[in-house]
Length: 318
Image 1 (tube, rainbow, N blue to C red):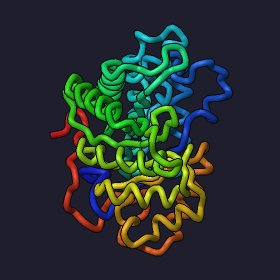
Image 2: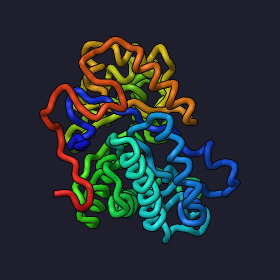
Image 3: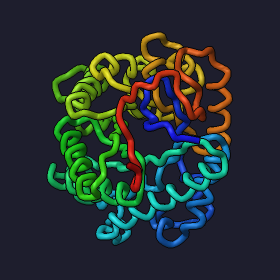
């Protein structure tokens, strides 16, 4: 069965796997990212469980894969190989699932970029860029189909993170979509704004910056919000005109409201969240039971609209 050329096609909506933390917790590793090196079969087994639950996109085991986070375990210099091997494991699982089911699967390389750490405090912009570059080059080199940047709302650090990702992709000789999850960090809030503007206003400004930086799809984390998650997404969608995705568990009512919104629903290209394959399976059932809003439900391999938003090529593809 031919693959769709991009998961960002208009009219498509894919199902994004949840966190790997709970599935890997039994291994009792102080650093989950180290398992990419020491327990590759266990990491692949965790990916396989999400794929069996219906996920069409899985995320790499790299939420703490930045050089700054790995430095806690004296693994600063292993940041590239951790990201590379994490992508390799996920790609192997995704390709095996494709071969078994005939349905396209994708790998989302997760690059969480720190704005500050407990040991060093606020990170200078050049370190933010270098960290993003290291992770992106490893993830792309390992075969990831897209890069998910998790960044705080500070526009300068956001620009440094996206710039680092683009340099990392160039290092790997790849051109991939860049997705962004914004999270609010009170330490970087506007000092003179009201409480609400410090959160929603700052996030909206970051969303506007993301549009200017050419980010292909955007989401917002639930933590530290002043307004409800749905209302925050609605405000951010006014300043960011591109694709949206769900990368958290906003609750059933908020998710149904978003997907059913006539203006926002058709812009949602990925839906994910949760902490287990059971959550992914439940999410798939929920989406399948919603009225058709013009986007095919997660797990389909064809789309209602063949206009390609962004071409996506894997290594070796023409």
